[in-house]
Length: 310
Image 1 (cartoon, one colour):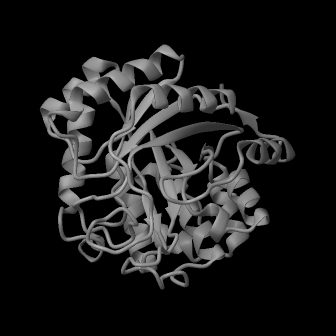
Image 2: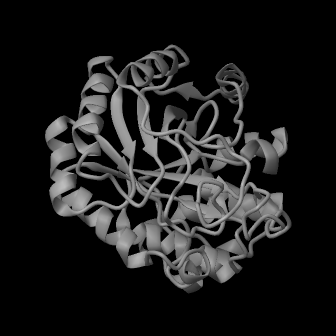
Image 3: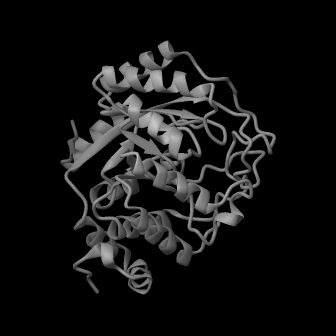
């Protein structure tokens, strides 16, 4: 079964695709993949002490985890790290903060960070939590190119992930960002106990949003969180199948490797994903976990005959 218009695919059809022999499914997804791969990078501009109860997250104040926490960093630190990211091939750079959303006092500093990133010739991105319409417009006025705000999982599974905000709260923020004229980066974390049907649902939830970029994280179980023993909720084949259906349902979006791939995927399956389903990479380290060296990713792209987006 092959769909000619991937973005119009139904839940039933996507479930049927998910169940295809893996090589056949990857081959179908590859039809929508590109020969170029985009690098982006980030800095954790404020870490820890978050009020939200996300059950996967080391930064939530609801759980006892062993992470280094710090308040909002200085603008000079953002500039330094952004320059390093650019040297490693990144074309986008994001400031990321823990917390429900930016306070009124945060806004001038964050807007200045965005302006400084743009001055470096990088495309500014930000992941700062829930926004209202006014704050989204302030970030647009500061020159923000793209805002990152994950849906995290499917609408039906979201109550199992957190109780301090709703799935609709996340969609509302995305809609405020779109209304302000800012690009949208919105993805998921897979392997949190969701069913196959809910993986299909999340792919279709994303298709409704139409994000420019879809970062896909693979759960890294963190000691002290409710999901610390969830390392067996998805295997490598399940990851490849989920990446495939996300790409098929969202053919115009950049599907991006994000956190967890170093722990959850073999080198061989990382290469299969890049060949068939993934055309973006969040390079370097992540918020509270270690990533892969950018030079290693560049070597992998050369091996696959892929080009780095510049």
